[in-house]
Length: 220
Ligand SMILES: [Zn+2]
Image (cartoon, rainbow, N blue to C red):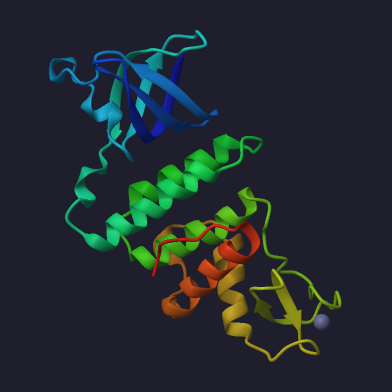
């Protein structure tokens, strides 16, 4: 079968082979790359974490790589510590993606994030990525009604409560609530998202993941 995927990691298998774990538009799969450690095979691109590859593998239970081509090389981020950190967070998050979701949409989105890494403001890209992914993890914030009293007159967001609060339940911070709404709902070019105070936003995103999912993001 022919698939496209992002390389999550690879582990040694027998003497010269690797088992490569990938995230594809069908979900996570493992593929054996026979002889991957032999440079003559030319499999390096297939076993490098973060690379995006299209490939053909056998249909059997133990899928075996037949051929592949490189769509995107993650190598270019290697000289920038901020990008390496962001990259690590993206890969960590992919590992946590549940099996029972719409992988096609999720895959396309994450692929797009990887393709934009290093091209736009990293903290903006990571904020859009992490806020949108809350949906995939089933812990999306309620940004329509007050999570305490159900009022429609929402004016702020509470990270610990997992959503918006109304004027009676909180001190208004509409500008910041609107950032969350924009980052969560809007679908546009990553460059076009409004700028914000990323120190605050990323701290709150970290708290959100930690509080509602138990995931500690290594991001600042
Ligand atoms: Zn309320």
